[in-house]
Image (cartoon, rainbow, N blue to C red):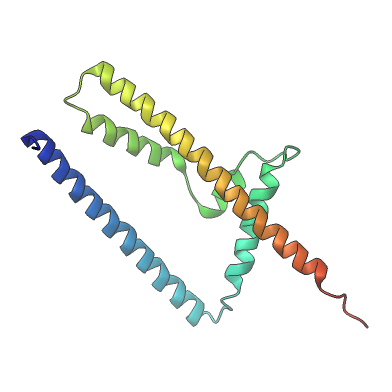
Amino acid sequence: EIGIGTQASLQWMQRACYVGCALILSECTVDWLKHGFIIKFNMIDPKIYEVYRLILCGDVVKEARPSSSIPSLRTTLRRFGFIPIPLAGLLFRVIWDTLATVRMEARVSLIVATVLNMMALKLLVRIYVLGHAAKHVFATQSEEAAEPAPTL
């Protein structure tokens, strides 16, 4: 049997998941419509997204090389306009407030565990993105190398 405190936290978690899913779905829908209108009314060829994808994949592959002088993922993150520090601050604040009733030692240990889990998740995502980018870049390079040179 679920206790009252556990059931209340379960209901809170379900509500938070519903809100999060609705937020992500609405963001994807708005972005899809926005890009559709931009492409249509500015008469841009939709294949530009493939070129943009190749540029981003090339940036990721270049930054992963040991000889690269570019700090890891800075150029790619700048192209996206993504700033991770405010998001991390928001995450820690939400966790801190959620654990308001927990003892200070447990709260700090949960924050440390969250930091370690986020670092592990970042590493896994980085490995996946690097693999995908390298596969895409090398496939494009092999296609270009396989094409016959134009004759004059």
